[in-house]
Length: 444
Image (cartoon, rainbow, N blue to C red):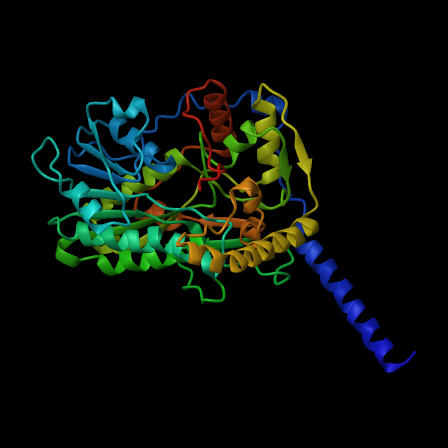
């Protein structure tokens, strides 16, 4: 055997070892926890939960909910109505659902946060009180969780960063206003690249963790844009009396119309991978309760809350995706088809799709430029297949969020356990009490 053959053999062995290590990392390990038994699941109830119980009473201030027609914004508007608020302004590109729009406490102004004049107009319009809203919730975002390409960065940047800058500018023009921003746990969750972690150990994040380096941040355009937006929110605190605060919910926000449970219930077949990884997830009602508690704390204890961010998560232990989907299947009245897909081929395919989209964009960009047209990063014919890119696979990690600081400082106490928000979501979707759609629908 000559020297070249030895080199080839060495490279082959290294490649095989790398693929084996990557396979172990992507596959994860079976979690030690066991799902609830069918008998235990049948005993689950959420009827006793009062979503207004753990939030401060009505303030009767003027509220502006930016992104109030979206998934989380809708829950916020509903909870404000339930606790007795009477002056609620929704600022969004789309109108709210008819059930919310018909409520006398709610008004709507079509607003584009990428336009400073548009957001100024929406915030300056007086409420029935005769004054503009002074409590501003910023829940609007474009969530391109699958995307890390430089050529599509502007889509996330324009909405999530420049849009936030416009909101801050308009908010500082309202004396003594309060601005609360909905961020994400991804902003502080370290990215586990390739084989750097075997998947055996749990990543625990808390508000006491040091800031991540550029290398450690998640790679998705969504996460990176939320990090930049957070910095703007923190810097804005104190400008013209403005008080700012940030809620970082995680790991996944769940509930009717979410992208986890609702998509599982509505898709004809559900491809499953990464099912062994465990995370602490949070019901949308608990997320919104944390927002209202932060608003209250900004008024009571600004020294401990203003210009600061708080991680929040749900009640109970981390659950694996497998246990979540099996529990959804238990409560579903129609058969659900889960297709187990091995993780390593998915990982390779994700890079192939990302490479194809890059080559497509570079090939078509000169042509579209000559025609004076803009080129979208993803072709419509690919549909939801565009989600299968490397940034999407960042969820394949064992993640537990420590929200003890939010519990101590804000008085936050989640009410919804995993089995409860799963049963609640299934019941709402199957009873047609939700508007159509879920968080995995592709919006071009």
